[in-house]
Image (cartoon, rainbow, N blue to C red; front, side, top):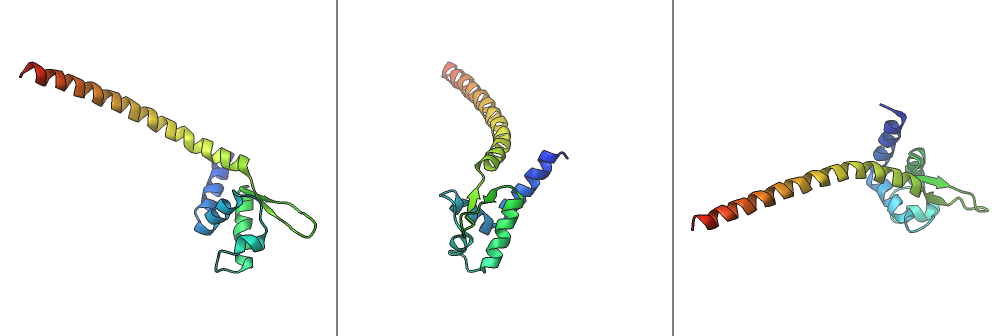
Length: 119
């Protein structure tokens, strides 16, 4: 298992939690503070902070300092890397399905011609 595999494991493990996925969804609309991210959840701000730390360790989010605020930002480059990893397998499967479709269409065309010949 290489370093990329370990990073993928950490990222997908972070995304396995529904609260963290909700945080990512919220951050897709723009940066937010911990207080803003905690609003929709019935958990403490400390618990939300721990979720954010997990997302930070997975490099899915970053924090910056803006005077007294510490907004959390989505890391689109990291999400793009996850999407690229998923896409490589999706593209392989799509190619396999296109091949299967072609075989089925060819087979259906041949059986259609055979049934016309026998009528």
